[in-house]
Image 1 (cartoon, rainbow, N blue to C red):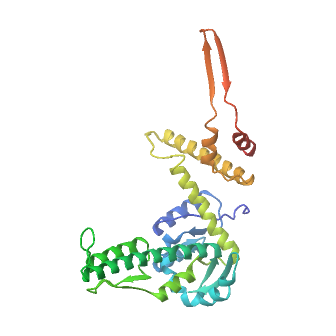
Image 2: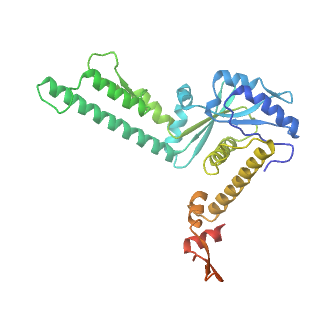
Image 3: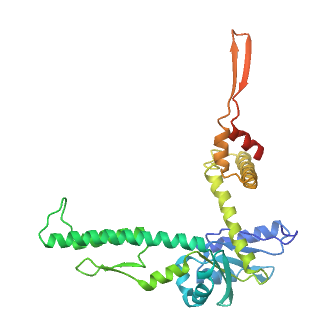
Amino acid sequence: GLPIHHEVFAGNAAETHTLVPTITKVLARYPVRRVVLVADCGLLSLDNLEAIQSIKVHDQPLEFILAVAARRYSDFDELLASFHDDTCLKASTEVIGEFKWQGHRLIVAHRPDFAAEMGARRDKHIAELEQDAARWVDRLDGQDGGRRHKGRKLSDSGARARLYQAVCEAKLASIVRVDLKSDLFTYDIDARALTRARMMDGKLILVTNVPELTPIDVVKRYKSLADIERGFRVLKSEIEIGPVFHRLPNRIRAHAMICFLALVLYRVMRMRLKARDKACSPERALEIVRRIQFHQVVLHRRQSATGLSTLTPEQKELFDAL
């Protein structure tokens, strides 16, 4: 939807040193006047941010919209506290705020439904961990009192190792703190870390230096990156672009072109299904229509007959939608 000569380049660059040659190629090949880098949280660190700012496009610093990794959310505790208490806790739909951070715009989008889901899942994990810990404590106390249990005897170090492994697997090590130095099996819940985690539930934090986009537009630009990544996933999974068993360049290009056309058809299918409020995915739609069969038989080596299997109402609805 952008005017000609005013293109936005959205990418997912894993290494900052690949940005310069990539952008240089784009600028040399197309009449692009403006580039805005859109990248997920894997690209953002203070060092990378400085490296990105050093890149020039037509003698101007590269513009960017970058997601902040969740592990860095603690850097914004004080900045977001009032926004969370005054706005997010009262919201029933998505709310977006803007702040200043190190000379850049900090855009924060909060989804109450995501926050509730994340909080409920975390509370469930913590409750399960505490139940396991209580069961192990009861067993340890029983052993000390002379009670016998089936299986090997449980030790404090064994219970500690079990809980620590379970906490790490649940990615709750910053909240459920297991005392690895104590001789006894002990742990505690870090109330401050839990409060911080609840405050950051359902939030997307973006850093940008694009001046004229509204906070809503910044969030939309970043979310469009998911559509690009979805295309790569489809190419790798459903369409199976690789491995490529070709040697000649023209055959490799032909293979890639066929896969690209398949991706275009896939996206058209998804758009049309969505426009008709169909819940099924393109994969599911293809699975349904794949059951349609065409048969040809020859009788007495002379007479031939053909037939198409009867379409089900579900298959007819899919053809109408597509």
